[in-house]
Image (cartoon, rainbow, N blue to C red; front, top):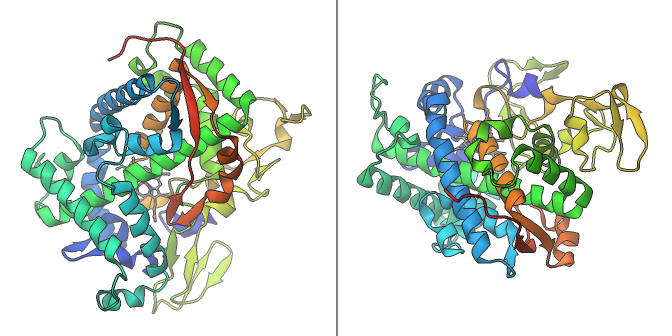
Length: 413
Ligand code: HEM
């Protein structure tokens, strides 16, 4: 069903996405016309291809190195690892890692803005009137401006590397019509929110699961230590991290239980078409259909046994499995339906930054686990973590204070 809704032959986006309208146009993620979306997606595809990935890998190495350095400086202090994942997520150009705080209040602004957008998206007809309601969409508008300003700074400052904006602005000169600065600024704001907040949330959830399940933490730590023995810096070989089965299983399992975009992914049967079949169901004209990753991922039809438990083994290819209770089960008793695993959505509007996000997450986990022992500093925050998760199109979350102790000091880059 997810493919029937979201896949190449699926439905176009629904009115939920009308909030993505800016004065100068619509951002990529708000384009509801599939043909326009395909055209606009082209520079993003170039900006995320394997050549461009080399640049992001260097960036990931330097930012994860920066994160590890900041953690070494704070050894023995209480560190909110959830907040630090945000500082890492927004490390490109906002100085959060260097300052150890959200200097410009950007992540707070984004949280306020997305909270506003969460209700506006459900009543998109209200958008033209919001300007008349004092405070109706102030943060949403402020966030758009902050994103656009960040892009303008990049344009004025230039870049010696072919970064994402190199492609979005068509500095490689392959588009028949060069996009306007305003269009790039709109998509730049999208890159900041889509790329920073999501990865930070995904990492924070993963730390929560690893810290609350020491047997999973220890098993992953062993895989990291075997892959990168003492003295070998994990950041020097990001490709090796892509082939670490338990690491990738832990990341997938955390994304399964808490996909950063928990609901959303709304689509609509085009009005005037008389309705259409979506999988085995007839959906009438103009009807909205949404694929909620959170619910789909916890459906025992798709993920079993223990659909609500963090059990990374389900992602491994093996003949025998051992459940956390110690009970042994065989491969045919385990259901892991990869086709309905939607943390990055799927189809033509699939996340443009999936490979960058996976590279970032693997690099952070390997570096931190290789270099630090981590101890929970406030058990009550772990206990209330799942109660503090709120859906705001993306996810707002609580704090996760830990104490970090240095294990070894690989060569810093
Ligand atoms: C763990 C991290 C991430 C997750 C879970 C994630 C998830 C998603 C999801 C579910 C969508 C579809 C949203 C929708 O259709 O409403 C999406 C779209 C998008 N994501 Fe990501 N994302 C992540 C990281 C990134 C990164 C690092 C970038 C890079 C800048 C990025 C850029 C985008 C863009 C541009 C879109 C819009 C795609 C389109 O409309 O064609 N994302 N992401």
